[in-house]
Length: 137
Length: 185
Image (cartoon, rainbow over all chains, first blue to last red):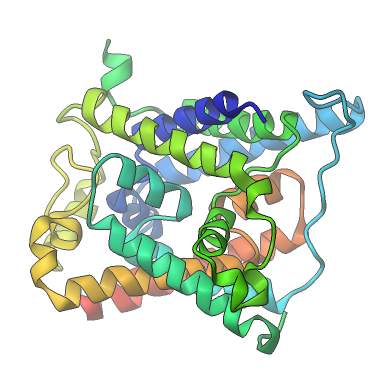
């Protein structure tokens, strides 16, 4: 594993999310109030770029960096877990205005109160691990 | 130089985020941030108690390197690449927030009302941040991904499960933003 390339990709990700303000609580609130196109534009262009890129990869059977064929694994079939899990996630996203990537980015930037969000997120992940077999998926 | 300091446009930012995801695919990996939370739980030794965390987190070290890089990127962007024109949200949004008692951005990324240093003296504020994080952590693992794993990676690969999850994200977010936030603040 060459750590540097992953550090670099992460570094660019941190800068882009900060400079586009996707890490900002205000931008998330504004998005959910439908008062700006900014966040919708970011998500839409990211997906569009991704769709085009993935289609190019699939149609040309492109290889990855190690020369292996690129395989993109499909998500597991299911419904309840996506609807219910998604709903829980959305409630948290709009409350503290950050999803998992931004939690780390904001911490790196020195917003120490976000440590509480990270602590909560780890607890939430742990609770899911405990309850996993009892939840509908 | 303005290009560095001002808010980056949605089309440039969206394109770069899409390229980051494609770059990780080219490296033979996938773009997904919330799985790092599971790795951190496993690193803390929780695999001995709960089966879900009993996996080879070391195989996920590359993703922890992405996280570390993202933290450095956040540091650089906040400390060296910002100016007072940033976070120019809709004036309507600012007026609405003022009614809830939440301060205007004025170049800041985060409202002091929720994230300022005074929150450490307020059990209610501490509770809000932990609960919010809890919902994010629980929900993303339950749904098997977050904004990066489902909204960007999943929808780019035309995955129906991801569409369900993303609709769930937005329904949850709209309920919080329109009905619950006014009750909380």
